[in-house]
Amino acid sequence: MLKFRFQQVDVFTVFPLQGNPLAVVIGADHFPEEKMAELARWTGLSETTFLLSPSMPKADYRVRIFTQRRELPFAGHPTLGSCHVWLAGGGKPHDGSTIIQQCGVGLVPIRREGTRLAFAAPPLRRSGLVADDVLVQIARSLQLDFEEIMASQWVDNGSGWVAVLLDSRQKLLALKPDYQSMKEMKIGVVAPWDPVLDGPEAQFELRAFAPNEGVLEDPVTGSLNAGVAQWLIGAGLAPASYVANQGTMLGRAGKVYVEQINEDIWIGGDVVTCVDGTLRL
Image (cartoon, rainbow, N blue to C red):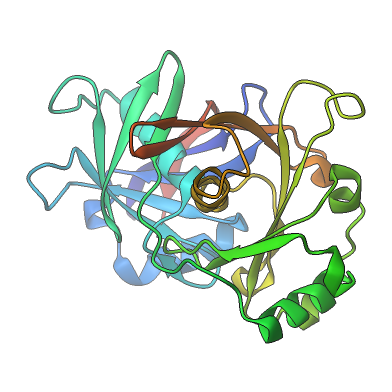
């Protein structure tokens, strides 16, 4: 029997059960590779990660990230959650401050902001305008009129997201997607908060739909927020610092803290540990 340390954490929240859960296998260098995808399906979560020794000199640790259907080169809440587990287990970054994660997209810097962690948004693998025929499919998938999409952009940093902007949070929360029409697309939807109607706690609301990953709606999505932030800030549609809310329709209260510092955009969030134990295989 093989035994591994195992934790389940909640990401983008200070309150357990209000964010996006992540399963983390610790010290997974000898974890059977053929079992990684199997375990990810078994946990039933949007992602499961495996902490490994780095193979690049500048990295502090390496992580492999699995959805229920495939391995991802990068994902946001697994990055913050895995880093939280690594630090809690006594991990010490080489330079004493910035943590360097090695994953499929290369090296991802992570910094500590008090108890909060933030990763530098990786370069977009695909950006730019969305073709009209794809927008028609997106509108059909979201059961919107084509004209209700105010703007759109590819925001793929390794996770495959395409994003659209709506004019109100109320319209976003009222969406009733047709998942079959999405096919292989992963669609992110963003809308501004009205400070009078919605309050001052956030400036944007997001929803993330990824039926091709086995998760109809993701509670709180770091990779999507990273791509959306690069788009919105770069296009002058958002300030250099803002808070995004996500997970409302799933009964969650995820908070994503976005900040541009020089040329980098940092995606921050809190992490809490909910399960700490041993995995036996």
